[in-house]
Length: 231
Image (cartoon, rainbow, N blue to C red):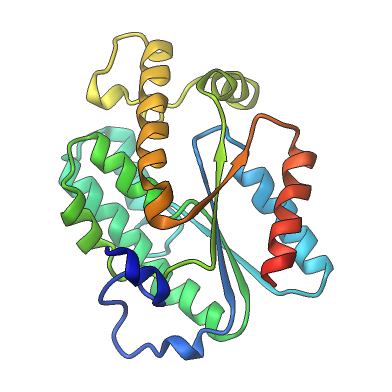
């Protein structure tokens, strides 16, 4: 995905028979680690946008009608190879792109995405995935109008995950790649790897980095100000 493609509507080959000029809505992506506050900010932004008369649609990982249930079940069993899991997630993404995101943008809606292809690529790269293959896999993806990355330190993430779920997630801790036998230690190592890879992507994909080590209200006001300028 070359930098000049950032000025196009798609990162690569795109979706056949889709005229980018017809996509009059806005695609806004919130990226960040588990516990960074993405879901809270998506909810607050939805309320704020709809309160100002903007129709919105929410999308995210593992939400397609086609494969989300099967993907969740397969992850619970931890039976998929890395490539199979990549293809599963890519199918989930493509289904939402074709059946939710593009129709909503055609209708002039604002689409709020709780994570996007960047998380999917970062996860796979950490697990040994080939970056060029992954870029080709997600070449159907639309270039968002803006990507906000909520930057939160790993120790803040630990505290927030324990407050929310009283536990750490197996996959978000990188336990499948055996960074450590201790889930806390593995979580810290995995999140540092994720953060470093996102930092490498920042310039290429033009993320706007938002400090997430603040209150939800302070972050929300920051996001609202930036989105108001975009709209």
